Amino acid sequence: MQMEGSRLTRYGEEMAELDIDAMLERYRDRAKAVKQRPLPPVAGDERKAFIEQAQRDFMDFAIIGDAAWTMEDGVLTLTVDLRPKES
Image (cartoon, rainbow, N blue to C red; front, top):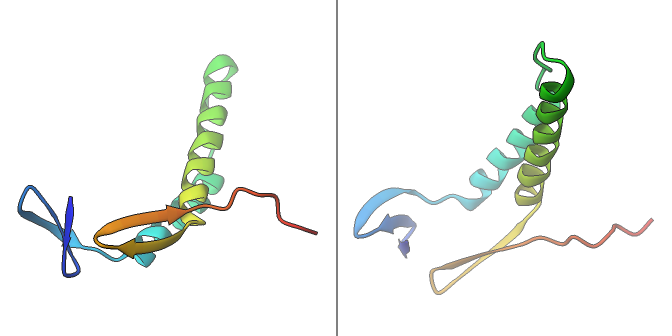
């Protein structure tokens, strides 16, 4: 994928307008949605698997949603500080 102006292209085909701040906001929204996701009527191993998947989904979305970004020479870099916050 390459940047041409503010358009994202892949193999010479225009894909979409690139708005990184909006993309990161969508990841934050997805993390919130996972936290609010109702537990389906499952029990036992299926319940445990659902909860574990929801925890992984939340972590993945929250990490990306917390990223800072830079764009240099058409290369998007997401930076995620995983250090514990100081009290």
